[in-house]
Image (tube, rainbow, N blue to C red; front, side, top):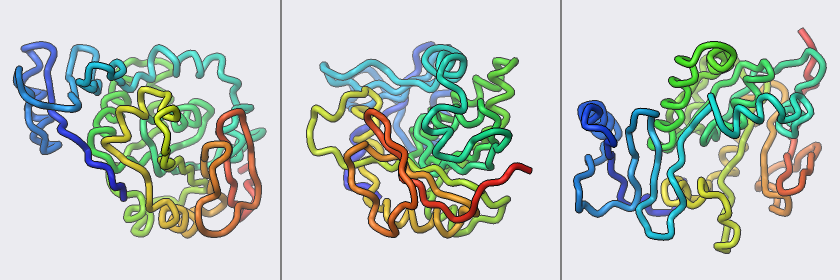
Length: 263
């Protein structure tokens, strides 16, 4: 698990009509509701447009929310390069092959959404409850949006819990490919360029159990495990990958078990 203190997180509502729903959410997440003047490092905010996470420090970045309907993900869905994207190649999408994927470190669900948009059935696991709540909210709004986005979200199933434990006790259809993107221990502030990282690191910390995560994935996946890493980061402790895909800022270490074939 991680070594980072999660800080003080409170649930805030941006509309008086949402107070009841926000208090229910706070109780489910075992977090305090926010009152003016309370000390909180992070606010999980419920507004008319769903959930968002906001840091309260003066130099903090803006709020983060999961939005599969508009913005960057909508643009990526339409113009992101399709099956030529690195994540698609890493999980083995080619021709008519659309593997059944488990994204065991879901985060904001961006990679999972890309894979689902390309036709894969994707199960997502997120162990940090606040991040899981943001992701569940984004998936619900996508399903309610109708059209293509709802169809894509229909291929995504979210599980909340520890991925190592869930994979060890797996009872459903065995994932052909497992996608991992463990939080890498950054030592320099200059590395924290994305506002999501600045917000989520106090919550999720670094995935110091990445070797155990990889071992559990290798034991479960039927065909391959694809591990996303910073481009210059060392491989995760354990077996060496059988292949590598390298991009400008990141790479994928591929651990092959069997060749993916079209149905």
